[in-house]
Length: 492
Image (tube, rainbow, N blue to C red; front, side, top):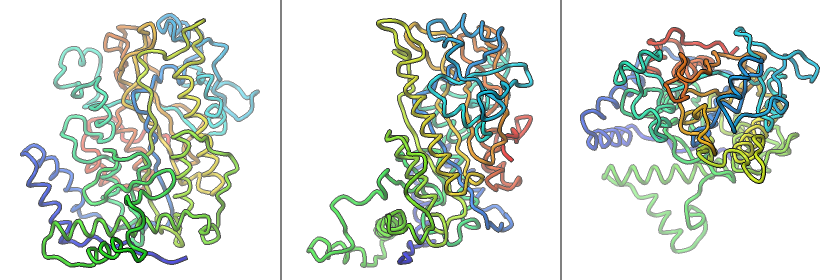
């Protein structure tokens, strides 16, 4: 295979772009940018990365109703669930029990609080993964400025509540930056890439941050730009191949790309365009079937991926991970982003007519897709022999209100999420199920759970496994010290 080298970004251009960014920012934003840039100039001893690890963020856009994703099944708590959820409540007989092993006869899992649980009936694949020990739920996570009780939430909104707490756009941004009380500049995934990339991927041929769903705040960094890939390969320039062929326009483009300029803006644009073309060629070459022998794998997955949008995104991520080695992209650390939407279920969350059926409907279909896609991706990682090296985690704007609004649910706050992979400490749950009482100790007053775990803690646990040194955690998660622990314990 031809070894295609992506052009390096020259320091002059980087300095120009950074200075241009400063010139366009107000005083507050400049402060935030300078804060983020501290991490790239910190005196961190060089690390040696000889292994491979990847983080995969699976974002559920719109605010997933996690109250029906995983449900408490012990008698007292389930009775509370049924009484308050009303016509969104799932029948106990439909729930798929969490078990301590992969077999249907294995004992039901019980957490330290005495709760047993069941998955939504559409999530049979997730039930299998939990039983195999490669999937674990993390309860009641959310964006927090600092640890917050109900009394504090009600008494001092400015001090304790994240800004615009029930707004889609604000909560998405705060999840992805993990700094809810400061202006959004970079994402926590982007800050990790800024710190680790030089040491982790010295010969890397593509960006450490790859998005399968367009621009996202999570992967924004100061030094490492997110690279966009479609479900069919590199996002190419409109108009066909611009760097090959003999046509007049092709020749003109090649001449333009080869022309040097003293104008920094023009030179920067030329470098960016050239880099996009070369990287696109590199990527498409390495994921083509002809690259199979060089990368020692196969494009025939033992568990087929669903043909849904999310299934196609995760399938492409699997292909990119397969091409990670020296004969491909030469990457030791990678961060991926994928997303699927439709979770803003104010109405038609369940089937209402001709007869109410809470096990079917919009939300059931969405969860079924998530379950099937996560299962196929985990099986692909096992097939590639990198299950212990790839960790997938779910995220969403927020959960939804515990009481129904008759046809669906409204915007909530704290949510339940899942981590998946061979390095996850399975057969356990993490965090605590909230007290389900309306106006209880975990409720804002309207059936919105006050998070007991912060996004910072959840993300720092992943970052530690990924290889971020403890000395750099404050640079990535500046609010982390406000919380009682920086490691939730769900990673080996």
